[in-house]
Length: 381
Image (cartoon, rainbow, N blue to C red; front, side):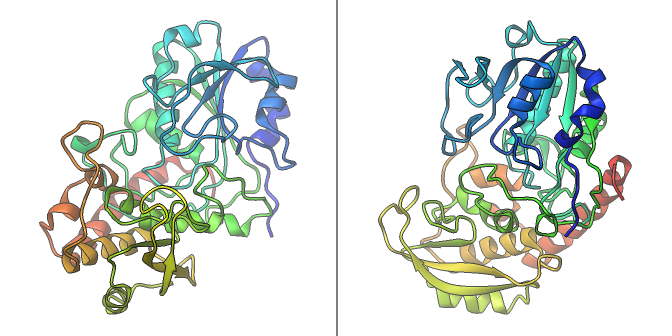
């Protein structure tokens, strides 16, 4: 297995960037070096760390999805911790008043609808607006740096689960994505990427000699990141996405679901790299808490062949056509559009405007467009 150096592993090579600077750090429990030493402690020792900024789930990862927190003092460092998941998603001038550098070290999951991407983007905007430097400690994309999948988001449906016009599976490291955001969407902050050493685009996380550190409570394994790209859409439906089980996103279902009928329809679609297994589960929290659900488990046989976005859209399309009990739910924060439109970045999944074949064609067209664009920002072969 390849042994790579993460961005934070190379801090000693970049100490001149931090010399005589006051540093604020955006991080969570994935912010660790290869020896499992926390980025918080590393920067406390090697730089003048003065503030911490918390994304969704908290700096220490102790909060479930959607839970807000207030400003507090970190017990271990004494640093003030500011929340960037609540009413303030962008650091305010007051938060940045005593900071010269905003550093970012969080493991992403390779999916457009993961909120950490926009925590980074909004902080980059704040860095530009307040004349601060922005530094990203780069990390692997767990679903690989080659494959691109999905439709490019329509800006009508921009939100904190999809802000810029990129596809669901973008095939860039978090540092490369920062470069793309900065240039293509005119953020124009003073940006430095501390790159990895020994990383190759073809790697998925299972290829690496690195432990998987949960970036959020419902992404317990690196394999979950592939399933998440397929089944996160269920967050906008009355189907459980497996929260409250030991396999979130790898299983989905509802009390009313005819799983065999669904599986038979999915087999007819000849989706590659994946099989479907009938199961039963009872969530301990979230949708259908304490209610027995008829469900399906994704068995991913080939992670390189598997097309999670195509698979997820196929499942949603078939379920919405087959089952009268199926519903799109949860108006998102604008109070007007269902959440599915923001997860999808478009309305075609909900409105059935086009056929499944047309959806596949759209995914391929948008893949080709973004594949050409992203190559300009590759930092690794």
